Image (tube, rainbow, N blue to C red; front, side):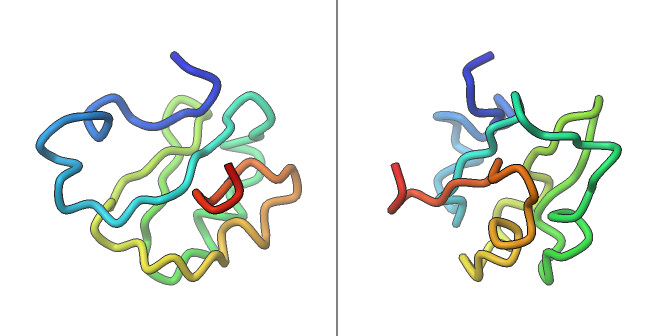
Length: 83
């Protein structure tokens, strides 16, 4: 898996065509199951934690409000305009 932890099903598949996802999750620094701050803070329930990794569970729900990125203590969520 790449440094950024997108779920494979969203990467280059037809499921991504209508996706609003414009951020990366850097799971190397993510505490997933221990933290969950981004999952709890997201007003649209976009993020989930599976196997101690944060990933996208609801790609159509993202409104780019950036609440997830602002609350992450390890700066693991990076929006497109930053990379």
